[in-house]
Image 1 (cartoon, rainbow, N blue to C red):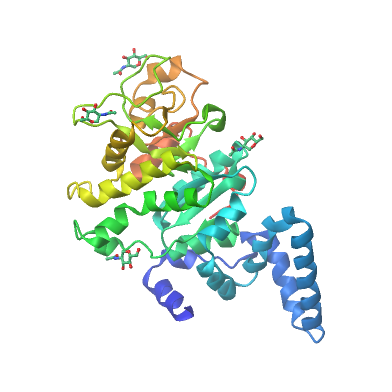
Image 2 (image 1 turned 90 degrees about the horizontal axis):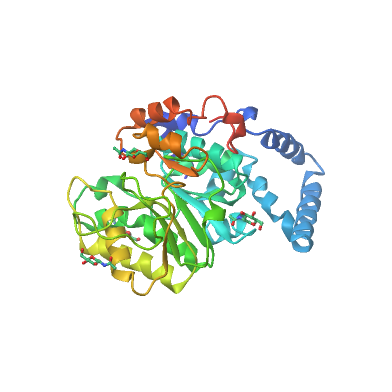
Length: 366
Ligand SMILES: *[C@@H]1O[C@H](CO)[C@@H](O)[C@H](O)[C@H]1NC(C)=O
Ligand SMILES: *[C@@H]1O[C@H](CO)[C@@H](O)[C@H](O)[C@H]1NC(C)=O
Ligand SMILES: *[C@@H]1O[C@H](CO)[C@@H](O)[C@H](O)[C@H]1NC(C)=O
Ligand SMILES: *[C@@H]1O[C@H](CO)[C@@H](O)[C@H](O)[C@H]1NC(C)=O
């Protein structure tokens, strides 16, 4: 495993930065580092045993202490890193989802860390960062997040293989495109509510008060056309392609049979219908067919457009943005392609917090 890491570090330059050992990474790490060094003195073992039993006692008698236990593993680099390899979804879900039974989920690979950072800052402003679970799509992301913010990232094996994903219609392709609904289903099976977000989103307000009622699945429309303020909340009529344009970028699901049925159908649709080479990793059409086919048995809720506009509306219709000022909740930076363009657009709209407000992120500066 050490060898593996070493190789990866040599191959991919960015990985070097993925393991910052400087004390700046976390003051807690720093303190702990100092402690552990002295632990290996003569009476070190006894002290260590004492410390461990004390922690064990605390965990048993004061379960709310539990959230700090992952800090234990962030102390020294390689043993800590190997620990995170063993960290399971069940453990991670129990860690972040203990409070309200809701887990805010995203799935991120290393190139998207700046977007993760931006998204996290916006969530921290709404005081919901404790419920965030990052599904790491590579080990670099797993280690970076957990080193800075222990317990908040998990890697669900196997690592998505982007190489084999290119073999269109293959098992690798299916594995790659279906990973998102599979992970969400896994979390529902554990009994948690899931708030899934793409990380090219920004929270301007707390979305949870908008999740009215006890519906199975909540989603947003990806259309750019302005809807009436009081539009209905059921699944819209299919569009030109015979299907709806619901966004797979933000989905809230309760751990109900209905929500699970949607995810299972979504996985099935992905397996049945490899779309086209162009939309290789686009799982949104399959999600829409899944909604279409389960609509009769599932309680669905379309969130208000004014609060959850698509990027095609928010970034392209200034009149609308002015008219609806103060009513926006989550902004999605879509209807644009390219990493740099997305960052520039967030930046130009005052929604890029990464440089100036890194201290507000639970990850600190990365
Ligand atoms: C958790 O509960 C608190 C208090 O009821 C509420 O304000 C908050 O929005 C809830 N969080 C989630 C993620 O549901
Ligand atoms: C697909 O995923 C399964 C397990 O989920 C794994 O065993 C298999 O190797 C993967 N196949 C490819 C080609 O990635
Ligand atoms: C499902 O899609 C078909 C084909 O476009 C359409 O005729 C039907 O009305 C849709 N059903 C629902 C519930 O939206
Ligand atoms: C932009 O928003 C305004 C105000 O809501 C609306 O009347 C207009 O139709 C929208 N323009 C486009 C191109 O959708």
